[in-house]
Length: 389
Image (tube, rainbow, N blue to C red; front, side):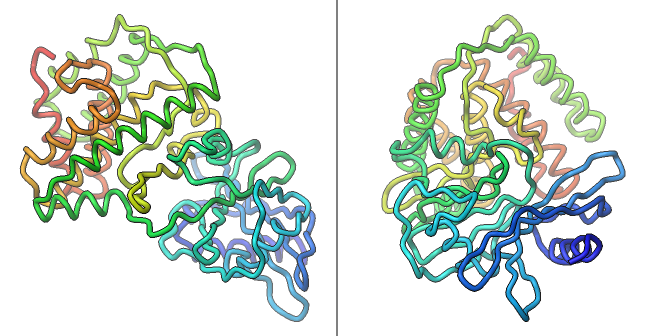
């Protein structure tokens, strides 16, 4: 296969997929690693290099399965090859648990930024699509959280030249998406506080385990945080006129943290109800990659656990809006979640309020662009901030 043929093939395969955001760019190149022999096939790690008009360049992984007499195909459409490569200890594949043979493979249809293939109901592989040199945060944190009970157990990894291409994890039995479940409860007017409390308790375990196994003595300046929050909110004000009436209250919220020194550690980084699964009565946090558009360095940087709490609290607000539940439903969920985490909801927490306000500002901008009918959700939160916060 010539370089041009590889470029054309990878572009054709990627441009048809939901996970690929590079349609606004152009092919800058393509490269292939060493092929791995797996039974009657060869597994070829191939990377499409995309250049964007703003100068960004991004790499996208499209692993190929090559068989004599057949056209190349995305390995995620023939997931058995990936599982056998792990089971047989092919170069680059490292198993951390015994790997069963012959499990049927099923590609998950709801993929977004990555691709997941399930192997029966026992394990799965998540193939990372946008890759950066180095250890993937999701792989790293699943290793750290092993045995904690609040994250899926690690089965193995695919790592090429120090860069993670895929992670193999426990497939959680009978999983229910946290956001789907919360919306259902909100729609039915059903109490969700038991689940909210358990979600808080599980997140506390995540944070405690990360702090113990990845100890950090780092801190952040409240003044620097406040300046960043104000800068981002000013951008929102420039885009969305409706936030102008909340500017004074928002500025007071951010000003209240200026003198704080904030302890930081490794966190989830993209925490919301869509990142938790209920599996046979147990809440498990998933997808530890952090914000998808952030760099690997940014996603690995220590932060305050309150960022994760703020993300989950904002998510409860969206579930309430989706289900049309009363304000009392949301308040009860928020209180239960904080209590489960170990915080007193009756004690003011200016830093948590600042993080949630910053998140709400981002949401206003996002909803104004893509989902105007939901802009009321973050605006309602901002409208409840006291002027003298």
